[in-house]
Amino acid sequence: MLKTVFVPINRAGWPFIAIFALVAAGLWYWHFAAGLVGCVLTLWCIYFFRDPDRFTPTREGLVICPADGVVQSVVRAVPPPELEMGDTPRTRIAVFMNVFDVHVNRVPIDGKITKVSYRPGKFFNASLDKASIDNERMSLKVTSDDGTEIGFVQIAGLVARRILCHAKVGDSYRAGERFGMIRFGSRVDVFLPDGIEPLVCVGQTTLAAETVLADLKSSEKARDGEIR
Image (tube, rainbow, N blue to C red; front, top):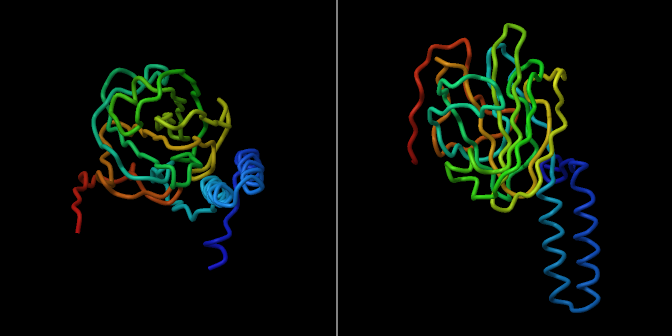
């Protein structure tokens, strides 16, 4: 129970938490009701920057979800040109994160980072399809030991104004390890290898480092889902 309530805070959040707390203290001194609002916002800020540990499936071939949120779309799309993954459309899984989700992002497979590219852009609502083209983004590619390439893209949203990425070309990661975060509402796209079907469906809730997006060693057909 205590582990559920008292989770670790990502270090990128402490400056924001401090600012929120100072503003709340000033508001409290000025007016009781305003101080209560400030306290609520400070608690929300602490909640936003939570960074819980996750239990990641480790079987070879699994593609792990890099973000908490909801599967916004599963479509065929061409990867961003900066990833140099060709012009052939691939299955793209878009996971939308609202301001109440954990925003720490994780690497989807074991491998080495072979591409990192930042592109400035606009700040449309991340749930819109055009956000993948027009919005500010950080595009990454991870390559496994057997040469499998997975592209994944951090996309800023309507509220998000800062993409944090600690991964660099040449860094080695295990699936589920933290590589960055996006502040205040955003989206992460994952591009699967050609011929690999997703194991999630639109509307499904995901957990970073735990939800399996696909199985590179399976021939299972794409899944459908419905509200029940």
